[in-house]
Length: 338
Image (cartoon, rainbow, N blue to C red; front, side, top):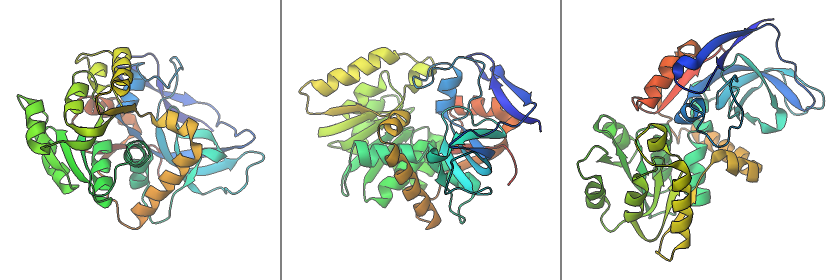
């Protein structure tokens, strides 16, 4: 049976995506299941992978991108127990999800509750596990403390705002004015990222400082983030958006600065968060945290900011919009129908 997937022919722009037809379905090996992919996403992480700038991806094109998925188990390989055909599951694939079918290790899958939609479940995998782990496992922010989130109107940012509100944490968020209502909707105080003097605007909003800053931007944003901290606060970096978009900075130098700032006796701590590295080091945490988030979703204690659902065939335009910063929340791509 033939099926389709999106192949990245070369690192570069969205024009490097091409639809490829594969003649035969993949067969699950020992310990694997085959999944019919229902939904995947276009996230900034996928943009970094497309450009060849994501450290956790060593593969060279051609390959199939796609960082996360929700799908239905379609076939089961030898030695798999506890999973049945027809089960709806979620997984963090890093690459490979831009495909109608994919084989994955059964141990990497998390069941999706019946009461949760495909789109909402997808919004939790990368975009909610990331802020959950940064907030609770890295910075360990407590009730009554405060945080600053850069890019607060995006998928990770809106999830972070909701998690902070749920935990009794005060949140401030930078982003463009068009996303300020969304930031307020999810419990944050917006700060205009286009302000003429952004550092002054942040200082005016946060007063004596915050306990943690979450910064996906890099380059000249990192020093501003440090200045927004209280003594003893932590800067958690989790991306290099400025460098990826050609707005200055150097990814290797940013890593060096983070290490140096963490070592210096400046009263602040720094950390770099990678969901892939965290999962490799603590695989049980990923499944626990995603299951916790699914439970919050099923109990209606979390409202994913799903911006739009588009067909996978619109992958080029989806990436263009994510890269331009136009998307408010999570951009979901429908691969097959339920």
